Image (tube, rainbow, N blue to C red; front, side):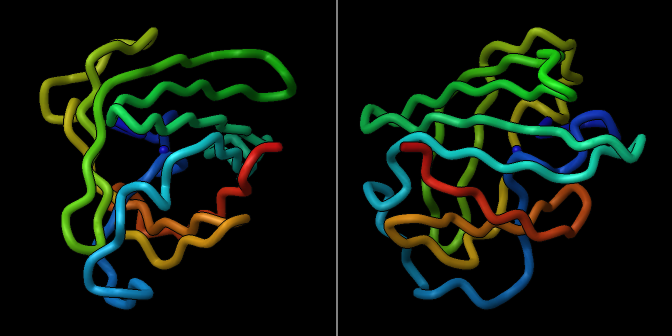
Length: 131
């Protein structure tokens, strides 16, 4: 999911620090693709985030509530151990400098599901591979 610097962005997009990834070193290519997750936003409404991780290590995504787009973002990503590190280069919402780099713990990844724990809020998010 700074995926994010305030509660608005609440850890929907990717954060990390719990132990337990499926392996100590996750292969970046296993994360490449289109992913989506829906989770409660701080205001109680459902927020949907769509994320595309490209093989050239760029990413782009968007978040919406009730079908209304409120945030688009893009940048570069990398995998270090059991974490995915996000380097935000573009954001439709202002990000403080401290939020331009974020990390999420990779709990597991397979052909259908990517499970991340947000460093921002400590919550776990299960992204489904978009078809």
